[in-house]
Amino acid sequence: MLNIIKLKESHKDFESTFKEVVNIIKIYPEVFKSTLSRLGSLKQRLIDGHVVLEDGVIITFNQSITKHKVSNTAEIYAKPNDFHIHQIATNHSVKGATKKVLDKFVNYCKTKDGSAIYLTVRQENERACKFYDNYGFQMVAENYWNSKEFGKIKGYIYKLQLENEKASNFFNF
Image 1 (cartoon, rainbow, N blue to C red):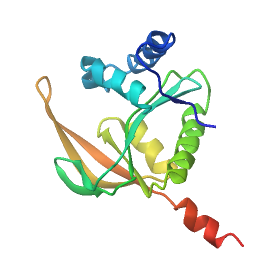
Image 2 (image 1 turned 60 degrees about the vertical axis):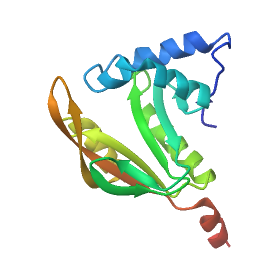
Image 3 (image 1 turned 90 degrees about the vertical axis):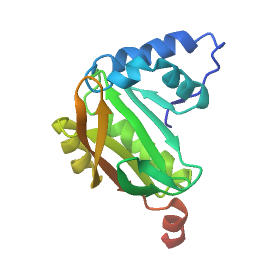
């Protein structure tokens, strides 16, 4: 079962869980600089139940409510119930944990009637791009961020098409 965290800020484990998530993200300060500068949104994801924390891997995400653009710089649209991964990070404490946790997350998305998972990654993060390519995500568009420090940053939007759980059950004779 996937370990999705949903905690009220008043919960006794909220601060320690939040600290654990932040410490994993801090391993990659150049990748998650904007997240580290906006920790309030990370806290809100914990409160909303949009954080997976398992085996030293975190995934922050949301599920679409309406059809919307995945990015301001690309004509890619997510449908209602599609998922968007905001961050995937690991502390590398368990070998193969990222794939294992992502497998569980994909299965979770299928049970929630998701038809696709979207994520964005910076072009220079070649290791992540290779991981997503090997996993089965397809690069569907280029993306750009504007950074005060670095100017325009190029990235990619990846999409993993999900087989709908209801459809697969229909065909299981």
